[in-house]
Each structure stands twice: as C-alpha cells, then as structure tokens.
Length: 79
Image 1 (spheres, rainbow, N blue to C red):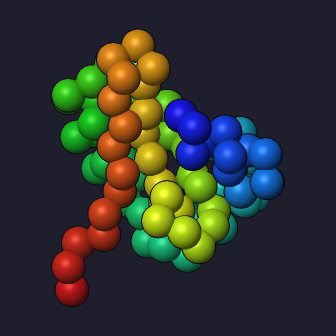
Image 2: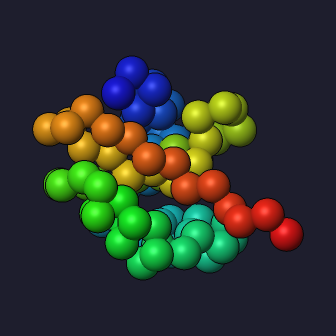
C-alpha cells in the first residue's frame, strides 16, 4: 500500500476509471485482463485493479484487496 500511495503522489497511479490511460497502458503491455482477473478472483474476493506506471521495481498491473491483504502482479508469459 505504501508503494501505491507513492505512485499516487507522483501521478503514476492509473485507475480503471481513467479509460484512456488505462486502455493505452493495457494495450501497450499486452495485458490479458480477463484471464488475470479470473485467476485472481478464484483466490481472493474484492480485488481491485490498478496500474503503477513507472520505471521502478513496482511498475506494473496489479489486483489488490485490502480485506484479505493480498496483492497479485501480472507477469507476462515467457516468449
């Protein structure tokens, strides 16, 4: 949650409600949203998607839930 707050403070957080930025980021990084959400939802309830658009270790697409203290990160399949 600290990393998410940092991303928010510097304008690197993208929420799904920001459709233009969200769609562009997902397309650029070839995220398979439906598959990721399906796998995550089978393990945890109340997952929220968020993107940290940066260059550091924490950059990426996440599903998180505060109720179960869980965070999943999308990792692209190996080529």
